[in-house]
Image (cartoon, rainbow over all chains, first blue to last red; front, side, top):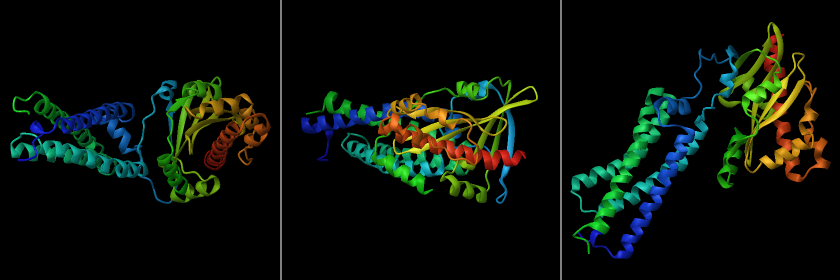
Length: 181
Length: 184
């Protein structure tokens, strides 16, 4: 195969290394942002995307009133960052194409690695499937059941794992492999 | 809906700075419901017709179609009611806490949240006495804090005072229409 990152020109190897470093930086800050707004537990993700729990079904033609006692501690509770449907539409529109481009770029790196075909196919599939799971989980959490928050978490961790596998393998093969040129 | 789309479009183009808490909610509650010993949250889940009515009146749709009023009592005596109202601006959201007396007039207004960019504008407007101009307003009246401080502050503080006016107007209409009328 002509495309082999182990034997690529040093400038190409440097390009790929810089690309991976940039993606790594964006993933670190992505994780920090998730910890600030949605959290890493199914409960917090469900609270972010499922929305306000209705104690009763909303009749279409009448306004309903629910009253409950509060404590001062309730006022001090950190507010849950809620993503409503309009914001989720915007998030999906903005994030999914970018995730697709990132998965494509990482897949191009995978294609240049010395991996068995099966592993390469699996890794490329993982790179694209992870963001699909991430966003499918958000939509299912909102419209099907809060239990689907776990799908978003699996998707998020899969994105991170996919990136780490590609980055570690690429750096090892490009800069530390015995077969490199 | 159109205001939401406008806000999202503007936010996509402009850089929104991070949100900052100017006054913590418990502190705002203690200031607006002084001496209260027991607190209650009344959630008003608006029907489509009522949500539309509110939107027509003040160009506002509360999050998830739910208005939340917090009331405080000392023993059996009502201390007052308050609302937290969010206003989305092209520079990010601000949050205004509006407290009402048991007689239904505005007791006080506190700007509880802004963004890093808007914080100095809010502080300038408040220092010029913006929130004093809301005291005593009735639900049928329109707030005019921005006009009242216009000759004493810069353009940006006057601008943000207009956004606070919007928040107070929303609280007044929501309170007059969906809290006081329901209690009568």
